[in-house]
Image 1 (cartoon, rainbow, N blue to C red):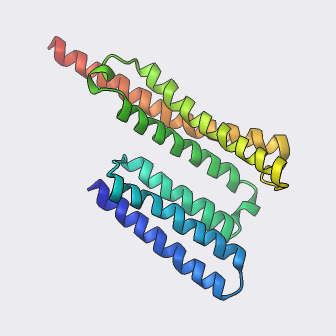
Image 2 (image 1 turned 90 degrees about the vertical axis):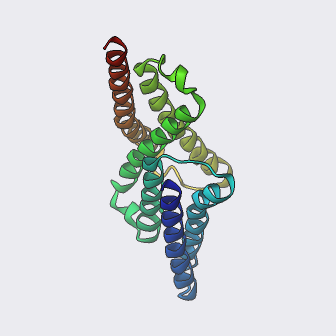
Length: 197
C-alpha cells in the first residue's frame, strides 16, 4: 500500500512539474522552467528508491516530503511566495517536521525491535529532535558556503535570517519529537501492563 502511495505521489508531482517546465520554457521564463525541472528530479527520487532499491518509507515522511517540495518549489519559487516574508519561516518549520520524520524512519530502521523495547522514550525524543536540528544546521552551512564561495545571496537576511531559520527548524522538530517520545512512552507502558497482567 505504501509503495503505491509513493508511486502515485511521485508520478503526480513529476508530471505536474514537467508540464510547468515545458510551459515556462515555451514562454521564455527560463528561471521558472529551471525550478520546475529541479522539481521533476526531486519528485522522481522517492519513485526511483521505491522501484529499484525497494526502500520502505513511513507515510508521514512521504507526505511531508511532497508538501515541502510543493511549498518550496511551486509556491515559494515559481509563484513567488518567498516575497511574503513569513513563507520562508513556515517552510523551515515544515523542514523541521520532515527531518524529524526522517529521524524516526532511521531510528526504526537501525534499532533492533527487541532493543527498541529497552530504549528510553527520552532517547527517542532527543534523537528525533537532534536529527531535525542537525539537518537545519547542515542546510545553513550550505547556504553560507554558497554565499561565500559563489557570491550567491541565499542568506538574504544575514545572521537574523540564519537564526530564524534554525529556530523554525527546531520548532518543527520539537513537535514531532514530542509526539514520537510520547508514543514510545505509551507503547512501553502498554507492554509493561501486558507483562504484569
